[in-house]
Image (cartoon, rainbow, N blue to C red):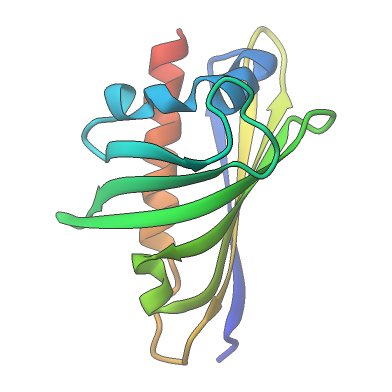
Length: 151
């Protein structure tokens, strides 16, 4: 069984790609209000909310499987590709994974629709660590909540 893995998910959204990317880059602090069932708090640890500079560090407090967890990440943006990478630094996921990195790419489609390509790359600590499907499902649910907000 391989310890390095990748899970890819594609979510069609009824939102303009630039608008969706703009939300991720400039308005992500609204997520606890938009997706309160899953996200309780997002805290800026390093960087600036107004600039959302490449390399800012955030701590997310969320609920998964009825349990409170936290995830500390550093964000990297690629404006040309409408992509952002969240590099996992600390948090509950590291009980099972050595690395945990999430990439979102927003792909424009016709008629103000977009495709959010979610790519989760991870390395398990050992063969007993689960494939992180529950985290992909969590992220898909948050994307759908953001879609509803942007309509």
